[in-house]
Length: 303
Image 1 (cartoon, one colour):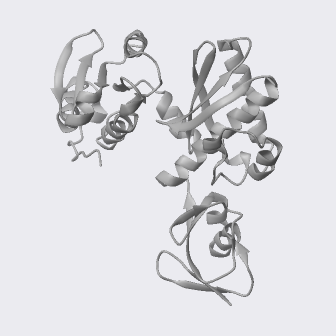
Image 2 (cartoon, rainbow, N blue to C red):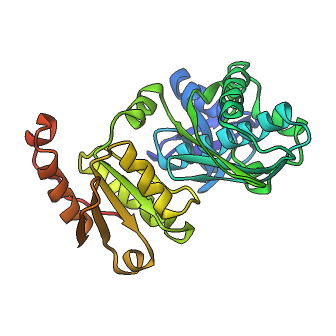
């Protein structure tokens, strides 16, 4: 007999080896449908991973950070595969999860355009809807970028539903950036007008910029991050054109000091302050929004 210990301390017995997915299905069909990976003695594994001995197992869904990262990494891999389908001579150089989504970096003899970006996204949605297993697609495209090919990945492409490609940058080496969420509703919220945009100066501040963004969201503010590998002046110009009311700029100084620099959309430098102070300031700045006016400011942390 195989004894599986679940996170709540309960134990289940099975008379033969079984996969993470089968364990999830034995608990509930809803959990099996939601599963994107598992933890075996604390290590993340694919849903197809076989358990043949006594161990501790937990089921990972997209409702936790590890599950959402797995979803985004799988979406990035779907992008890499789509590029290979549409542009067989393109070389996919790199790819990773970043911010609220992912990116793929590629080289192609002809620079891709915004029109190409739309075609790529359309093909990605078609490929996602085919419900292919990710392991099957990986076997067809064995030379994908290392950081994308390393698992775990979602069980099938049908899990990848709420995504969009939102930026194409570069010339000889181009980066396609995308956003991926667990549900269409969350993607719609990301697309909605934001109160504040968090921007890093370079890739060294990426993680801190995203942590600040998450803290602002927990405080009830509509915040997005722009962690693209683009010049900060281009980012500021873009989001001013989009009329985002407030911009947070994060460089090494802010990273080292644990604070942020706040600017208004009209270019006013509002100074350096803690994330908590930003939450207070922005709630006053968007006081016309009744949803913010009616609620107290919760405690905010970037942990």
